[in-house]
Length: 488
Image 1 (cartoon, one colour):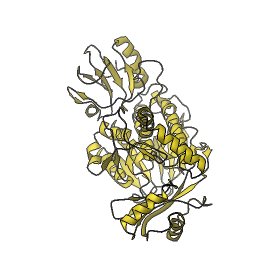
Image 2: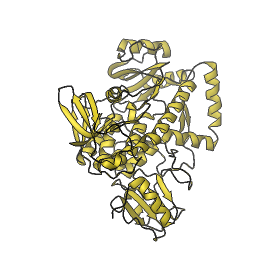
Image 3: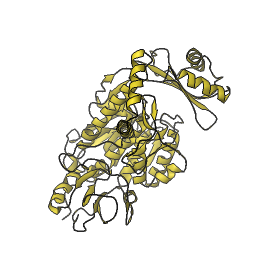
Image 4: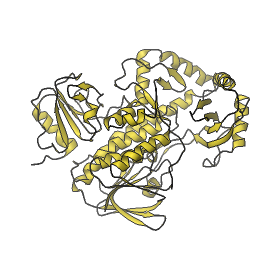
C-alpha cells in the first residue's frame, strides 16, 4: 500500500512530497497533465518561503536562478521601502517564475525518492475502516483511501492530500463546502512579445497607473512582457481563454495603445473571488494550497501560502503514517492553517478595494500610503504579506511560543543549517536539558552562543517554537504534545 498519494504536481504538492520523503514515507504524486505546465501564475518567493527553502537546504538552488527583491509594504499597489526590524535573517524575496520553482522542487522530490506519475487523472475516491474518524493518528495503519483514475486504474493509500488547485477534484469528491465571495472584477493577464519602443511602454504605463493601479507591464527576462489589464466586466465562462484580439482591444481602451503585442506565450483571466474550504481534513483526506483556498493574486501570496501549508502538514502527516502522532496532531493542520488562509483572503479582498478607481478607493489608497510611511505600519504590513508575522495559537506562555524562529549564527553554525532533516530541535544554552526518549525525532543542540535571549527553545520541524524555558519537567510535559510518546 502507498503511504500517501498527493494529487497535484504544483509547488504545494511537490513541497509536501519532499517533506514526507524526509521521514521515509512512501509518496506517489499524481497529476492529470502529461508535462509540466509552463504557465507562471506565481512569480516569486516571499521571505517566509525563502526561510523554508533555507531550513531544508534548498536555498542555494533558488539563489542560483533568481534575483532578490526588497519591497516592503507591497499592499494594494502601494510600494514602500523594506522596513527596519522585520524579524528575519532573510529580508528579501526571490523573483522565481513558477515553472522554475516546480522544476527545482521536482528535482528534490525525486532525489528523495518520491514517485511522480503524470497523465494520471483522479476521478473517484473512497475511505473505509475508520478513515472517517478524527483523532485516529496513533493507530498508524487503520483504514485507507481508495483512488480511481480516469484510465480505470485503482490505487490505495493510507492518506491522500488534494493539492489540485482551485477547481479541486479531490475537494469536490469529498463534498467539502467552498464558501466565499464570487468575482466582482476580472483582469486579463498575458505573457506576450511587444513591438513598441521600451521608452514608450514605460511612459504609457506610468501615465495609466496614475488612475488605474490594476494595469502593469513587467519584463519577463526572456524577451516577453507580462501585461496585466482590467477586463471589461466578468466573463460568463471564466474558464474561457481570452483571445489575442480581445487582449489588444482592451489594451487600446485602457492605455490608448496595444503596444504591438504578438506571439502570446500565455493568455488568461483571473477574478477577485475569495473562497475557502470549510474543512482542511475529512478523515484520511486533506486539502492544501489552492484546493483549500482561492483569492486574488494581489501581494503575490498564493504560491507562498500553498508551500507554507505543505510545510505545516508534512511532518504531521508523516508522524500519522508512522503511528507516532499524538492525538490531535493531524487536526492541528486545520486549526493552524485555516485561520492563516482566512487572513490572506481578507487582506487580498482589502487590496482589491484599494485598487479601485472610484474616488473613495483613490482617497483610501492615498491615506494608507501616508500611514505606511510610519515604520511600524510598514513593518506590520510587510510581515503580514511575507508571512513572517504568522503565529500559531499554542496557548499561554513565552512571547516566542507559536512563532517561527529566525535563522541565527551559533557556535556550531547556522540554526537553519541544523534543520535540513526535518526533525524537531531543542536549542539548549544551558546544557542541562534532555530529550531522552525522543532522540529519534528531536535533535538536541547544546550551544551557548547565538542571539537567543532565552535559556532554551524547542522547535517543531517547521521551525515554530513549541516551548521556551529551562525547566526539564516543563519540557517533558510539552514534548508529547508535538512528538508523541517517548521510546522506552
